[in-house]
Amino acid sequence: MKVFLCPNRTDLARLTATLLAEQISRKPNSVLGLATGRTMEAVYAHLVQRHREDGLDFSGCTTFNLDEYVGLPATDARSYHAYMHTHLFQHVGIAPDRTHLPNGMAADLAAEGQRYDAAIKAAGGIDLQLLGLGENGHIGFNEPLSSLASRTRPVVLAPETRLQNAGLFDGKPESVPPLALTMGTGTILESRRIVLTVAGKAKAEMLRAVLEGPVTAQISASALHFHTNCLVLADEDAASAL
Ligand code: GLP
Image (cartoon, rainbow, N blue to C red; front, side, top):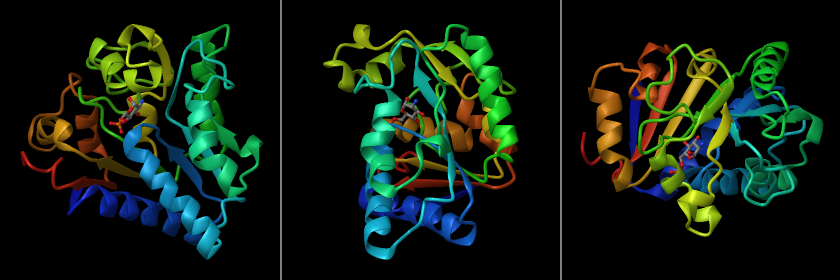
C-alpha cells in the first residue's frame, strides 16, 4: 500500500476526484467501483464540477456501488440508490443502465449477491474502486469478522455502523436498517486498482490499526495489504495517529 497525505479535507476530496477523472480520461469505458458516505460527497461534487467545466465524459463508464441497505427502495431518499442519483448520476449524463447498486429489495438476498458478482465479472471487472473507511475498519459494509475472502452478500450491520450512519435516519441508530447487501472483501480485492480515502480525527486510530497493525478479519480494511495497487489518501486529521 502506498500512503499519501493531504493537508485538509478539501485537498483530499480534490485529489480523489482527480484520480478518478484521470482514470476516465485514460479509459473512457472504465468500470468504476463507487462508494457512499460523507467523505465521498465532496469527491462527487468535484467530479460534477469537472464534468461541467472541463467536459469530463462519464457516458462510456459503467459503475458498481459497494453496498445498499436491505428494505429501502431506490425511491427512498435514504437509500444509496438515491444518494448516488443526488450526488453524481443525475448531474453527469450517465445512462441508468450503466449504473449498478445491489438491490436491497430483492426477495432472495443471497442470490442477488451472486448476481451482482457475476455482473461485475461480465463487465470485465472493476478498473478503479473507491473506498471509504468505517470507524470499525469496514470497507463497504464488511463488518468485523467478515471473511477476507467474502463475496457480495447480505450482512448484519454492527451497532457502531448504525450509529455512524444515523445522520440520514433522523439521528436514530435504531431507524438505520439492520441489514445491508455489500460487495465482499474478496470481491473488492479483485479490483485492478483501489483508492481508500480517509478523512477526520474519528478515523485516526482505525487508520493507524489498518496501516501499522496486522492483517485481521477484525478489520476488513487490513486486507488491502494483500492488494498490489492500493493507494491510501488521508487528510492530516485522519493521519494524526500514524
Ligand atoms: C458507509 C459505507 C461505507 C463507507 C462509510 C464511510 O458505512 N457503507 O462504504 O466507507 O460509510 O462513511 P463516512 O465517509 O460518512 O465516514
